[in-house]
Amino acid sequence: MQVKKDGRYIDATFGMGGHAREILKGGANVLGIDWDEEAVRALPDPAVKVVVGNYADIKRIAEENDFVPVDGIILDLGLSMWQIRESGRGFSYEKDDELLDMRLSNLLSITASDIVNSYSLEELYEIFSKYSEEVNSWPIIRSLDRFRRMKRIMTVGELKEAIRIVTKSDATLARVFQALRMKVNHELENIRSAIINSYEILIPGGRLAVITFHPTEDRLIKRLIREQGYKGVRTRRIRAPQSFERSAQLRVITKNI
Image (cartoon, rainbow, N blue to C red; front, side, top):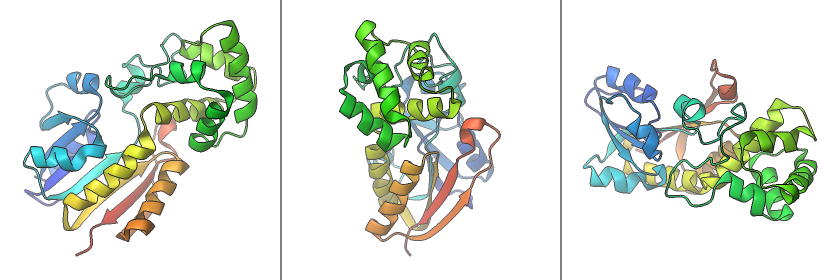
């Protein structure tokens, strides 16, 4: 994204502020948005205003903060390193003792543990097949069902134990954890709203950059582009050092002039 000096830009998934810092280097103005109130509180005095809110509400948030129209918007759909390493909410399958929470906002009521323990086998299959495309979905679900009949699955380690009976694959663990996170946080619904609302507040020629990490997310973006008649889309893979970032895909939508 070419940054204009004194332009307006929104980092709608602020995280630890990495994208915002790069935009600030270009002499632009930045508004940050992040749904995770704990992550915002953990920020070391950010150089820009950061609003706690859902990126699905980007239009309302921008208008309430007198930050419209905008020259560019970034939506990075991955987790921040703070959320993975420090939040204690069970986002990473490497943190065995953490509770299976996975909520990005305390305003949400249903946790990953609630889903694993109370959803029917058919509902779990819909989640895993839709959000993870995991080929071992049914064997994993049957294993989860056997475990939860004996004891409520509460922690990352307990969920892993049930999955490991079916497969030792870390890739499967990553897909299952991602599927649960996406369901808990209504991510596909929020992404759709965010794309449409972001487009509305861009200036003509303004750009929306979306970084996705899952084929389901990317297909949703492509479908929206067709449905809404968006133009000027460029696509490329992003090479990133972290293993969970290797599947990153960048799509740039340019508002019609």
